[in-house]
Length: 254
Length: 254
Image 1 (cartoon, rainbow over the protein chains, first blue to last red):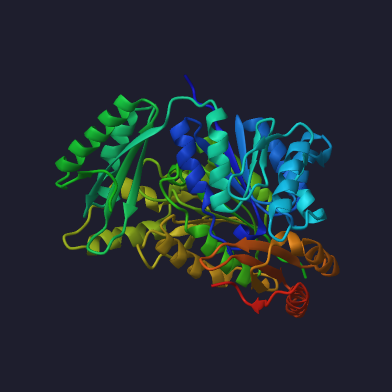
Image 2 (cartoon, chains in turn red, blue):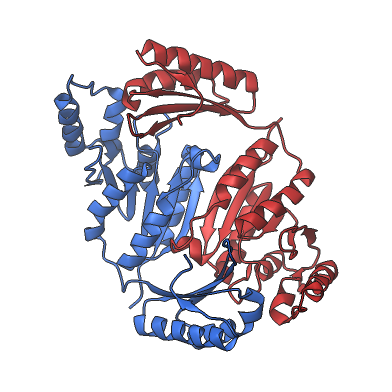
């Protein structure tokens, strides 16, 4: 069984300018791996209408799922929702249920908040959008076709993703096993690792140098959807690193 | 004068799987903004030959500069260099000066290191590549056309970028000015901010909610290459936020 694939679009000038460190990719990549919908690509693009529309249309045709983060708040630079409508060629219009949720949310505030034109934009969506609940700050995300539109603020994004996750049909979970050895140089073990990779063509075997106070080393990670093969490959790596004179440990370096 | 543009390709399964938090985008985005070559897009792609070759060719035709990070070490999953050669349609062959540097580096180690086949791959480059010095770990990066190939390890990437930076011709630096106000909701100020943005079409004015112990708020950032306009726009934001009843401060929230 093959796994469905995912692409992440991180939408926001603040990430591209270096002002904000993205924190959503790591969360989504990890959770999507667990669900069995591995992330195959991520793009970080600016708050520019033509760019967003063209990119959404390109990646939704390429991947089974597209997740977007950012650009669904009330301000003028929040244009993701209307761009997704344009990408799908449908009207961007008030969503009755989103409207009801936000209207009653602001009415319940003490003193009552103003459900003004800017906030009404958060209840305006592509025709046909299915809401994604937001237990943190009410204003929902939405799914349009295979495109899942999430907030950019990590706490809100995570709540939205967890509301959506039970509806996503994944393949076998991606599992991994790591072995690391302090004091070992990548260049010494490269040939042996390539040999192990060749014996496990369905797995990804990655080699990652690390630098720590008290001595760096190499972490080797085997990853794939066949758990038995992953365990066996990690064991082979352990045996090989021992043969290189190292004292390897299972797991990631701490 | 318009600014040259940049695209960043982050190459590595470990970022896409969520194992590793990328730390290079923020550094490069900030430095490129200072140099006046703003980052317009970033893509994170896996260690897959066809994907790397196709992506390099797509983005080098679109942007003035392409920076890649990752995939230039000695192990089997380090394939960036040979993929760049394939993208340019040139042979991938030993680079005499890179070879000399690495050979003498390993000869100087005590006991001498083995300049083996895996390490020789780090001295193998697309024909015509110009070296980028690496004062941290010797093995150089390189520039091929408008594609600058850098290491993935942040400390090494930064050293390579700083060796390269003086050779890059940028436009006017991108400057920014921030104003923030605790206790303010984006939805209340959205319309006024849109009005300010409309008065400064050459600037990007972004609105970013923040969440802090003791009260969240909104940071508004004006950004552009005309410093006087950036300062004036930030001042207009300050005056506007005061008129909304907030006590805004210049700079980012801490």
